[in-house]
Length: 256
Image (cartoon, rainbow, N blue to C red; front, side, top):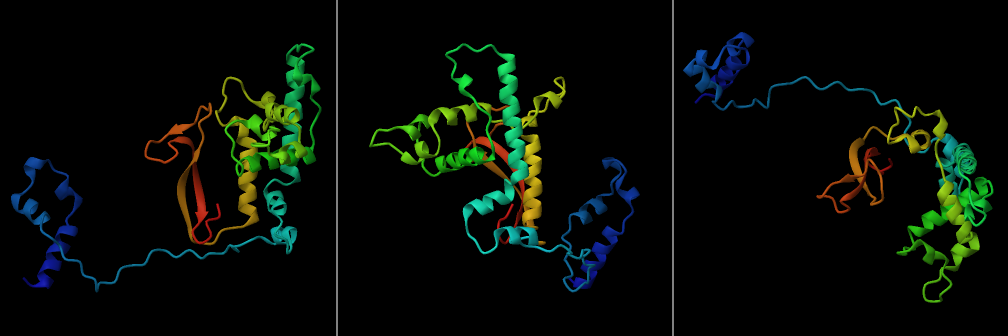
């Protein structure tokens, strides 16, 4: 069969009007139905219009303000402070102290309650608190109290040197990221308790290092088995239970 005739047959099928295909099945011509099933060769020599090319105008890589902040240091604390800067840490301090104050005004505590020993926190103390949380991801123990254990076989002196167990527990109880008074109680989002801090961190990730033009959108399941209204169960994942995030990542470096 001549290839030119094959292409002409395909052109005839493609150029058929929409009205020819809008009729009922009973009105279809048998020859047309048969021809529609014929294999149409693709002309690889034919030129096709290229997709629109949008010029990439952004400056990818670490932004100038971030470079100035980092300088020539490789101190992990400097990298941490890029995202959890003074503004964000002040916000967490304010909301934590506010939540503790509201708690004491709302409840009548007995004299034996350990919460009465609470004192307002500050940025320096919260940085120490977060350091212990991050360190727990490196030194894993089944029970949180074991981090302050004095038994030689399981002791981790670093935790007790940084903060007492009672103070750590108090900060864990009152740690807060939102002002409950500003939300409409009748229309409450499940995401509201971390909405503000999440939005602030997203902006930090955008401004600290703008991505190049090679980006990809993907989802990530962060393992979590606690009580949470928007926790998901995906049996095909290794973690199965967790929080699903949709992320825009730079393809070359993996920066989110």
